[in-house]
Length: 72
Image (cartoon, rainbow, N blue to C red; front, side, top):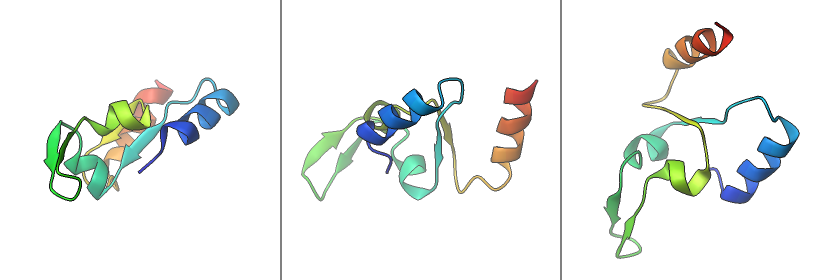
């Protein structure tokens, strides 16, 4: 997953570009959930990663839609 520190670097370098995350972890962590490995409640990955948008699933199709929406 994208770390908060990495998000900070990207946001400073590319101020006008949103950070978009996707894939399995982002899809599973889009809401708060219980993590069995750490025996704790994890909050949404949007809060942990400081990303702007989650693309649910692998994103092959949705990334095109997101790019078109951002362009318009």
